[in-house]
Amino acid sequence: MICQESKKRRATTVRRLHVVFPLLALVILLLPASGFAQPKPVWITSTRTTTGDGFATLRWSVEGDDVWALFRISEDHSGERQISFTDQAELRVCRSRPGEYNFWVQACKRYSDGYAECGSRSRRLTLSVEAGTPEPPPSAEAAVATSRAADGTGESTGGGFAGCRPHSGN
Image: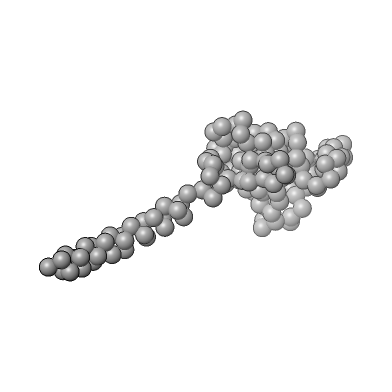
């Protein structure tokens, strides 16, 4: 009698484990790897923006602004991709070639060792540049080259200005 009760308990325990372990594995996979919440930035600028002169200021917000010391902006134009960084929740851009430019932003936490961990990407923002946009003035090109050379990374990292230049794509 005791043996049969023991077998029943063992069988019940095994059935419960077959349910619990997959659920536990799913919970572990869904937890953020870093242990801190990674909010998704939200665009303040309309996600469908048109410019006639090529200039636009892209603005976003993110919960807990004081935690996020760096923002990564991904850009795509005709399959050509670029990455920019800024320490402000906005980016001033100028694109002289007509077409659609897609942008995404991620909030990043910068660590003292120089490593940055970025959270989820925002929704896509599309900037439409109308035909006939004038070429940027040479002084804007020089300003971008100077700001990129200053930090030695080739990336735009401060001041929230990505520069007025033709996109390197088509």
